[in-house]
Image 1 (cartoon, rainbow, N blue to C red):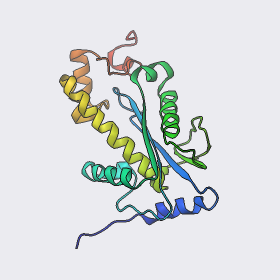
Image 2 (image 1 turned 90 degrees about the vertical axis):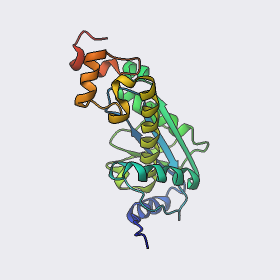
Image 3 (image 1 turned 180 degrees about the vertical axis):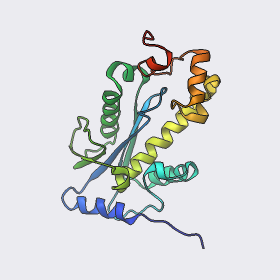
Length: 209
């Protein structure tokens, strides 16, 4: 029989918060660090009593497992939304501002207003509900962990799609992060329209705009 892994402490954390706030959503982002591509955020509402095997911080789960969890999360969530902020918004607002914007869009896209939003990290976006930061939230709250999986899988799929349009940058290998290969390709071909120009100044020179 296959071994099942359930990180029950994440679900217990959410159950405890629901004693005060019956409807909570978890909020997390993916893609703050890369040199290219939109930043993604997700918001997820899970019902009390819903348990999802293997759910954990998305960084601790294999890509194949994340893909399977993605399907299970969207089928079992009360509500979910994945949202983005564009490369242009990242360059205009800075990455923090764009991340907060994507998070707000994700919560607003749920179709219902939660009693409480649990947001991974130490910064809160402006939201239409009460919100709290949870440091290392994707390893603390099941709702945040679910949001981290949806955001990560959605962004990885997006990077694979733009890799087809811009094959010279090998996005499918590094997902836009500043790897040695990516930096070499940037110096060889220059930036594309999906690169974050404000992230490239040290690589291509301070006069890049």
